[in-house]
Image 1 (cartoon, rainbow, N blue to C red):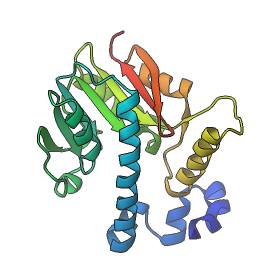
Image 2: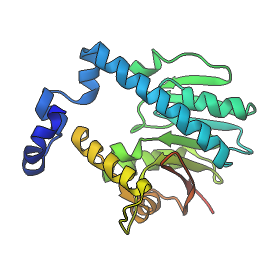
Image 3: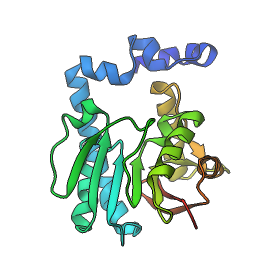
Length: 229
Protein backbone atom coordinates (compact mmCIF):
# COMPACT_ATOMS: atom_id res chain seq x y z
CA UNK A 1 0.00 0.00 0.00
CA UNK A 2 2.91 2.36 0.64
CA UNK A 3 3.49 2.52 -3.12
CA UNK A 4 0.34 4.57 -3.66
CA UNK A 5 1.71 7.47 -1.63
CA UNK A 6 4.27 7.88 -4.43
CA UNK A 7 1.88 7.94 -7.38
CA UNK A 8 2.32 11.67 -8.05
CA UNK A 9 6.13 11.43 -7.93
CA UNK A 10 6.16 8.44 -10.28
CA UNK A 11 3.95 10.28 -12.79
CA UNK A 12 5.99 13.49 -12.66
CA UNK A 13 9.48 12.03 -12.36
CA UNK A 14 9.22 8.53 -13.83
CA UNK A 15 10.24 5.30 -12.15
CA UNK A 16 8.06 2.83 -10.30
CA UNK A 17 6.00 3.66 -7.25
CA UNK A 18 7.18 0.49 -5.54
CA UNK A 19 10.84 1.46 -5.91
CA UNK A 20 10.18 4.93 -4.57
CA UNK A 21 8.43 3.45 -1.53
CA UNK A 22 10.86 0.61 -0.76
CA UNK A 23 14.12 1.56 -2.47
CA UNK A 24 14.24 -1.60 -4.61
CA UNK A 25 12.17 -3.25 -7.35
CA UNK A 26 9.66 -5.99 -6.51
CA UNK A 27 11.92 -8.89 -7.53
CA UNK A 28 14.73 -7.71 -5.25
CA UNK A 29 12.31 -6.99 -2.42
CA UNK A 30 11.00 -10.56 -2.60
CA UNK A 31 14.52 -11.95 -2.34
CA UNK A 32 15.11 -9.90 0.82
CA UNK A 33 11.72 -10.52 2.47
CA UNK A 34 11.17 -14.28 2.42
CA UNK A 35 7.66 -14.05 3.90
CA UNK A 36 6.51 -11.58 1.25
CA UNK A 37 8.16 -13.66 -1.47
CA UNK A 38 6.43 -16.85 -0.30
CA UNK A 39 3.03 -15.15 -0.16
CA UNK A 40 3.49 -13.68 -3.64
CA UNK A 41 4.63 -16.97 -5.17
CA UNK A 42 1.83 -18.94 -3.51
CA UNK A 43 -0.77 -16.48 -4.78
CA UNK A 44 0.64 -16.76 -8.31
CA UNK A 45 0.52 -20.56 -8.18
CA UNK A 46 -3.09 -20.53 -6.96
CA UNK A 47 -4.08 -18.02 -9.63
CA UNK A 48 -2.36 -20.06 -12.33
CA UNK A 49 -4.26 -23.18 -11.25
CA UNK A 50 -7.56 -21.41 -11.87
CA UNK A 51 -6.35 -19.93 -15.16
CA UNK A 52 -4.83 -23.06 -16.69
CA UNK A 53 -7.88 -25.16 -15.89
CA UNK A 54 -10.08 -22.69 -17.77
CA UNK A 55 -7.58 -22.28 -20.63
CA UNK A 56 -7.36 -26.02 -21.27
CA UNK A 57 -11.15 -26.15 -21.55
CA UNK A 58 -11.40 -23.22 -23.97
CA UNK A 59 -8.20 -23.29 -26.04
CA UNK A 60 -7.37 -26.12 -28.43
CA UNK A 61 -4.27 -24.71 -30.12
CA UNK A 62 -1.95 -27.28 -28.52
CA UNK A 63 -3.37 -30.06 -30.70
CA UNK A 64 -0.79 -31.52 -33.06
CA UNK A 65 2.26 -29.91 -31.45
CA UNK A 66 5.37 -32.03 -30.93
CA UNK A 67 7.25 -29.47 -28.84
CA UNK A 68 6.32 -26.41 -26.79
CA UNK A 69 8.62 -23.83 -25.20
CA UNK A 70 7.33 -21.89 -22.18
CA UNK A 71 9.28 -18.61 -22.10
CA UNK A 72 9.47 -17.32 -18.54
CA UNK A 73 7.89 -20.56 -17.37
CA UNK A 74 9.05 -20.20 -13.76
CA UNK A 75 8.36 -23.34 -11.74
CA UNK A 76 6.96 -25.07 -14.82
CA UNK A 77 3.46 -25.60 -13.43
CA UNK A 78 1.54 -24.27 -16.44
CA UNK A 79 3.69 -26.23 -18.90
CA UNK A 80 3.28 -29.35 -16.75
CA UNK A 81 -0.50 -28.91 -16.87
CA UNK A 82 -0.41 -28.58 -20.67
CA UNK A 83 1.87 -31.59 -21.17
CA UNK A 84 -0.29 -33.66 -18.80
CA UNK A 85 -3.25 -33.13 -21.12
CA UNK A 86 -1.15 -33.45 -24.29
CA UNK A 87 1.46 -36.12 -23.35
CA UNK A 88 2.93 -36.32 -26.87
CA UNK A 89 4.27 -32.77 -26.48
CA UNK A 90 7.89 -32.36 -25.41
CA UNK A 91 7.95 -29.39 -23.04
CA UNK A 92 10.84 -26.96 -22.59
CA UNK A 93 10.63 -24.75 -19.51
CA UNK A 94 12.82 -21.72 -20.28
CA UNK A 95 13.76 -19.10 -17.70
CA UNK A 96 16.69 -17.33 -16.09
CA UNK A 97 19.38 -19.52 -14.45
CA UNK A 98 18.44 -18.48 -10.91
CA UNK A 99 14.84 -19.49 -11.60
CA UNK A 100 15.63 -22.78 -13.34
CA UNK A 101 17.95 -23.77 -10.48
CA UNK A 102 14.89 -23.91 -8.20
CA UNK A 103 12.42 -25.35 -10.72
CA UNK A 104 11.14 -28.89 -10.04
CA UNK A 105 11.47 -31.70 -12.56
CA UNK A 106 8.38 -32.90 -14.39
CA UNK A 107 8.01 -35.88 -16.74
CA UNK A 108 8.26 -34.82 -20.37
CA UNK A 109 9.70 -31.40 -19.55
CA UNK A 110 13.28 -30.18 -19.90
CA UNK A 111 14.35 -27.19 -17.81
CA UNK A 112 16.56 -24.84 -19.84
CA UNK A 113 18.30 -21.72 -18.51
CA UNK A 114 19.00 -18.67 -20.64
CA UNK A 115 18.18 -15.08 -21.54
CA UNK A 116 15.10 -14.52 -23.70
CA UNK A 117 16.59 -11.29 -25.04
CA UNK A 118 19.51 -13.23 -26.52
CA UNK A 119 17.81 -16.34 -27.87
CA UNK A 120 14.89 -18.70 -27.31
CA UNK A 121 14.94 -22.52 -27.60
CA UNK A 122 13.44 -23.93 -30.78
CA UNK A 123 9.99 -25.51 -30.73
CA UNK A 124 6.83 -26.02 -32.76
CA UNK A 125 5.21 -23.29 -30.68
CA UNK A 126 6.23 -20.86 -27.97
CA UNK A 127 4.01 -20.12 -24.98
CA UNK A 128 4.31 -17.17 -22.62
CA UNK A 129 2.01 -15.84 -19.94
CA UNK A 130 2.24 -12.39 -18.38
CA UNK A 131 5.48 -11.60 -20.19
CA UNK A 132 4.58 -9.04 -22.86
CA UNK A 133 2.81 -6.73 -20.43
CA UNK A 134 6.01 -6.47 -18.35
CA UNK A 135 8.01 -5.07 -21.27
CA UNK A 136 8.28 -1.80 -23.15
CA UNK A 137 7.72 -1.92 -26.92
CA UNK A 138 11.42 -2.17 -27.82
CA UNK A 139 11.88 -5.15 -25.50
CA UNK A 140 8.72 -6.81 -26.86
CA UNK A 141 10.04 -6.54 -30.41
CA UNK A 142 13.39 -7.97 -29.35
CA UNK A 143 11.73 -10.94 -27.64
CA UNK A 144 9.23 -11.59 -30.43
CA UNK A 145 12.01 -11.50 -33.04
CA UNK A 146 13.90 -14.14 -31.06
CA UNK A 147 10.71 -16.21 -30.92
CA UNK A 148 10.26 -15.79 -34.67
CA UNK A 149 13.77 -17.13 -35.30
CA UNK A 150 13.15 -20.14 -33.04
CA UNK A 151 9.96 -21.25 -34.81
CA UNK A 152 9.43 -23.36 -37.95
CA UNK A 153 7.56 -21.77 -40.87
CA UNK A 154 4.22 -23.01 -39.55
CA UNK A 155 5.03 -22.12 -35.95
CA UNK A 156 3.26 -19.73 -33.62
CA UNK A 157 3.61 -17.83 -30.39
CA UNK A 158 0.81 -18.38 -27.89
CA UNK A 159 0.78 -15.29 -25.67
CA UNK A 160 -1.47 -14.90 -22.65
CA UNK A 161 -2.03 -11.40 -21.33
CA UNK A 162 -4.72 -8.91 -20.47
CA UNK A 163 -5.91 -6.76 -23.38
CA UNK A 164 -7.27 -3.25 -22.88
CA UNK A 165 -10.63 -2.69 -24.64
CA UNK A 166 -10.54 0.08 -27.26
CA UNK A 167 -13.96 1.30 -26.14
CA UNK A 168 -14.18 1.45 -22.34
CA UNK A 169 -17.27 0.17 -20.56
CA UNK A 170 -18.31 -0.59 -17.00
CA UNK A 171 -18.57 -4.37 -17.29
CA UNK A 172 -16.87 -6.44 -14.55
CA UNK A 173 -14.43 -7.91 -17.10
CA UNK A 174 -13.33 -4.45 -18.26
CA UNK A 175 -13.05 -3.16 -14.72
CA UNK A 176 -10.79 -6.10 -13.89
CA UNK A 177 -8.47 -5.26 -16.80
CA UNK A 178 -8.28 -1.58 -15.83
CA UNK A 179 -7.59 -2.45 -12.20
CA UNK A 180 -4.77 -4.72 -13.26
CA UNK A 181 -3.36 -1.98 -15.50
CA UNK A 182 -3.24 0.39 -12.52
CA UNK A 183 -1.70 -2.32 -10.33
CA UNK A 184 0.98 -2.97 -12.96
CA UNK A 185 1.76 0.73 -13.10
CA UNK A 186 2.46 0.74 -9.37
CA UNK A 187 5.15 -1.96 -9.51
CA UNK A 188 6.47 -2.01 -13.07
CA UNK A 189 8.29 0.93 -14.63
CA UNK A 190 8.58 -0.29 -18.20
CA UNK A 191 5.56 -2.49 -18.92
CA UNK A 192 1.99 -1.63 -19.85
CA UNK A 193 -1.28 -3.22 -20.87
CA UNK A 194 -2.09 -2.81 -24.57
CA UNK A 195 -5.06 -2.78 -26.90
CA UNK A 196 -5.41 -5.52 -29.50
CA UNK A 197 -4.13 -3.34 -32.37
CA UNK A 198 -0.94 -2.53 -30.46
CA UNK A 199 -0.24 -6.22 -29.88
CA UNK A 200 -0.89 -7.04 -33.52
CA UNK A 201 1.48 -4.23 -34.56
CA UNK A 202 4.24 -5.61 -32.32
CA UNK A 203 3.82 -9.02 -33.92
CA UNK A 204 4.06 -7.64 -37.44
CA UNK A 205 7.07 -5.56 -36.44
CA UNK A 206 8.81 -8.78 -35.38
CA UNK A 207 8.00 -10.49 -38.68
CA UNK A 208 4.81 -12.41 -37.85
CA UNK A 209 2.25 -12.38 -40.64
CA UNK A 210 -0.87 -13.25 -38.64
CA UNK A 211 -2.45 -12.44 -35.30
CA UNK A 212 -5.68 -13.36 -33.55
CA UNK A 213 -7.24 -13.56 -30.13
CA UNK A 214 -8.13 -17.25 -29.95
CA UNK A 215 -10.19 -17.24 -26.75
CA UNK A 216 -10.54 -15.83 -23.26
CA UNK A 217 -9.76 -17.64 -20.03
CA UNK A 218 -10.18 -16.35 -16.49
CA UNK A 219 -9.83 -12.69 -17.49
CA UNK A 220 -6.93 -13.26 -19.89
CA UNK A 221 -6.79 -13.16 -23.67
CA UNK A 222 -5.12 -16.16 -25.30
CA UNK A 223 -3.47 -14.75 -28.44
CA UNK A 224 -1.66 -16.34 -31.37
CA UNK A 225 1.11 -14.80 -33.47
CA UNK A 226 1.55 -16.84 -36.66
CA UNK A 227 4.88 -16.95 -38.47
CA UNK A 228 3.05 -17.80 -41.69
CA UNK A 229 -0.72 -17.80 -42.21
